[in-house]
Structures are given as C-alpha cells and as structure tokens.
Image (tube, rainbow, N blue to C red):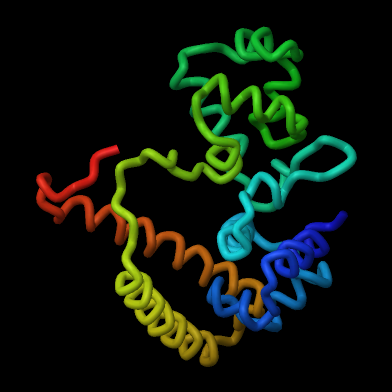
Length: 217
C-alpha cells in the first residue's frame, strides 16, 4: 500500500475530512489531497504531523503490511543517523551490534548509510536494545520521559499565530523571487518550522519555569 493510501485510511479511521486534517496539521487541503493521491512524497516532518493528528504512531504509518518492512529509507528519514548515534553512545562496534541482532556487519553498515532498511521485527529489537521507542529511531524524537513540559492550548495558539506570520512574510518574499518555491517546498518548510517552534517553546518553558513548579519525569 502506498504512503498516500495509508494516510487516506488513517484520516478516515480518525473520522476526519481533508479540510479537518489540514486544519490540525496546518497544511493546505490541496496538499493533503495531493499526498493522498501520491503526487507528492511527504517529508518525515509532514508525516509526523499527520500521524499526530490521526492518533497514529509514526512507525505504524510507515510500516508496510505484508512484507514486514518499514520505510526507514523514506525521504528525510533520520534512522541512519539515529542508529549510528545510539550505537556509538553504547560504545559498541558495527560487528558487535550485528552479533546481537544475528545479522551481518555489512547489513548494519548499509543501514547506517541509508542504503537498506531493517525489517520491522529487527527495528523493534533495536528499540529494546537501546531503550528508545521505534518512533525515536525513525524520527529522532525525544523519549516520552524527556522531562520537557507539555504545551497549553494557549501556547499552541500562539505558535500557530507566529507561524502564520512567518509564512505570510516568506510568501511575500517568494512572490518577488525569480525562482519561487512550489507548494511542496512551502509545506515542508512550514512543517519543519512548526516542529522547531514547538520544541523551542517546550525548552523555553522548562528553562523559565521555577524548579518547584516543574513536573520531573
């Protein structure tokens, strides 16, 4: 099943229209429609927004039913970098990791270069071995116990307002450019900005919240 078809099924399972999904992800309805028709290959940042809006994990959205594989070679996937980082942090070689997983060292090397992907069962074994979630491996997301405070509805509204102001400014600049970006580029940038702004806000809330009021993980 194509990624577009999986997104359409996830949207329908969540009982959302394309317009409602667009509102939740702050993407355009036309872009959602193009993704579902496989006209665009969405970035991992965009997939993360869609997964959150449809209450589906990123790993489930990327999991290919039937062949037990997972799209870790998807456009902009951070899996190769995440795997190498976790392996080096654990102070183990590619050969040692391969032995723990009952695969060849060459296979681990290809994963870290982004040339091939492990199957879903191996991905789950990696998550257990390194004590992280599958979603962390795929998108380098912070663990759930990252101790960063959650955003309030007010915070989210402010981020949305600031994001729209930034996008409006960028659109105005692009209109004057001789080489304007296409819709896919704009939506990918918007998704990346939203992700960065959200993380920055959570970090700022932790930094400026008195320690006695923090909820430690």
